[in-house]
Length: 355
Image (cartoon, rainbow, N blue to C red; front, side):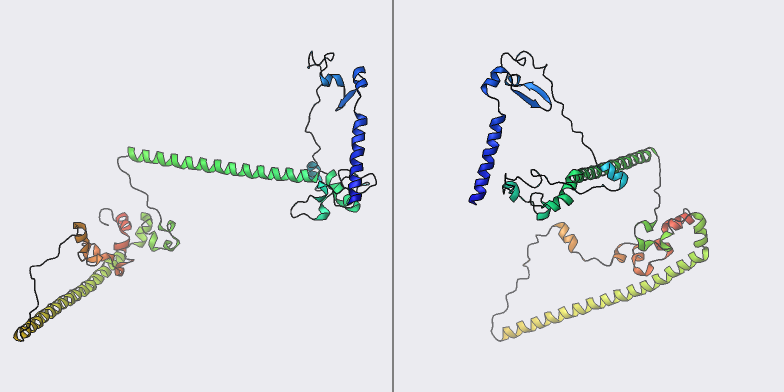
């Protein structure tokens, strides 16, 4: 460690001596022989210092201004044209900038650059820690072809392409939305101006794939096809099926009503029997000299229910019974019949008589 410190101190002293030797003296400043080199321009030092005798104090427009440019050789054109970049092994290895700073004796200085590392980076991928062979075959050709800059430019172009694609997509969706809204507005205006209009019957298969069958398309068929399907014989058979199903349902409802009446009579008999037993028990308690049961026949509980609650508390019968004359066709027995499920097709087949 002492040797490394000695080498570092010597290097710093050498650099300070070189800087002092290149600095102009006071005599040189008085004689005006000192100068500065700015990108190839030979400008006297007194002009930079703004001395009274210098032209800078009078006008700064006379000074030449160096031009800054960002032009660089883009090797991606060669890669795009040839498919690859031709490279060759470097002949030499730089002492400064590539493999790190070195002392006068040639030893590598272990400064901050030497110990710096990026996450998930191998040691051979660090130019400071790379050896001569690795520099000649990898780092040298890589830096000469500007590979990091090319990768950064490719990434930037990919991000710009994604941004443009997203922008075009958003604009296209916005145009489609505006077009759809405008068409809906025009359609509503036409409906308001028309005296009467009938909505178009859409096919049921558009709702679900299970409705993509022959029976579900009767309502959307034209008259030419309905005449081939809904023949008089088919309609007559459908009406006969409805009559037979209705007769059977009526018989079932008759037996169900008789059963309910029987259950009601049985319930009344059970209540009468319970009242008779209660009266007999009261008589026995009276004959035994015991105190009878306290009864309050006039006592009633307060009714705090709202009219809506009392309406909901009323018993309701089956849906096909409470829906009126058309309620019976809601049973599963009538499913698939033409006169029940295809009223629009019957109206189209026989206008004014189908419904």
